[in-house]
Length: 112
Image (tube, rainbow, N blue to C red; front, side):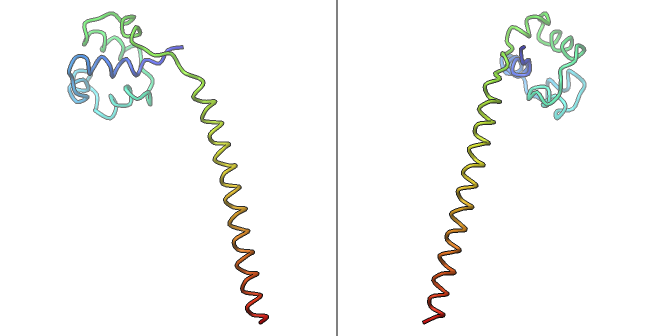
């Protein structure tokens, strides 16, 4: 599977256009166009047709600049999330230990 949104940005930059210029040519807002470049919005066939006309290329040529989806990033994110949870558990345990030591110290002072 290919992600096309990096290709959309690449073509815009390669052609020296701003997001505003492309949005104007596509008759959409800059935020709507920006979502195409970031992958927040799926690219429709109509938008692909407009982009291919704008850059004077065939739709398949847009895909030539697309990037394969890297599923390893999801796995890495899961591993990192687990590591963060482990670290948070360690921090919580250390905080409890500090509180126990603090309370013990004050009990000893009160007993003296």
